[in-house]
Image 1 (spheres, rainbow, N blue to C red):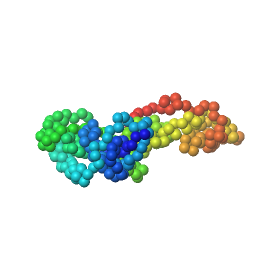
Image 2: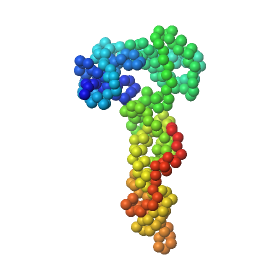
Image 3: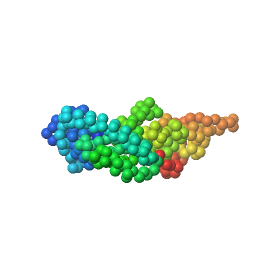
Length: 285
């Protein structure tokens, strides 16, 4: 067992464990920590507790110290100065006619680096821009190109469901989301229905995909023949959520009717398989 605290950085939903040393932290406290980017200010989201060694990515780094009032003032100054930095870089980008959209900026806590985040349709040669910015801000400049999902994660937005976007609230990593997930779940492939604010497929398609993929394999193949209490029929469609199928059967008078049956009411000769899922046309969006 090891004693840890859990912290989060700005624009991140991922929790990182650090050794609290002799400090006692409460949720909401600030902590000064060493990261690959340099010294950073982080927010404590998990107070001192013991966790199993298997939950820790070794080596467990120690905090530098508990944040002080002066540290909070430094953080506030960095946040204020980044707004000025954004105004300056936008002017320089316009002057140099660079095809890039500035999204955000941030100083590392110790101001050893100033990071700008931008989006662009392709590669941008910003070497001259970096030299100009370095002469203005007198610190190391880092320009990072981000993409549609990252932009929403930075800025935040309201999703079609009416809640704040998952990427801006709790998702620690972006998972692969593909059109195949929408097809297995029987969703409309209208982009307005399945795309998020970022214009990419909604991250939440992945949340119930395991259930739908497993249920898919229990259902009869569309177009296959099944036996029902009312006779033999042809499967027209499946509803994975209710685990029912719409079956076209021939009545005794020779007419046809489409009726709904549950799995327990059908004798299924040919079920869907994992191979059927793999055979669906797919693309990652």
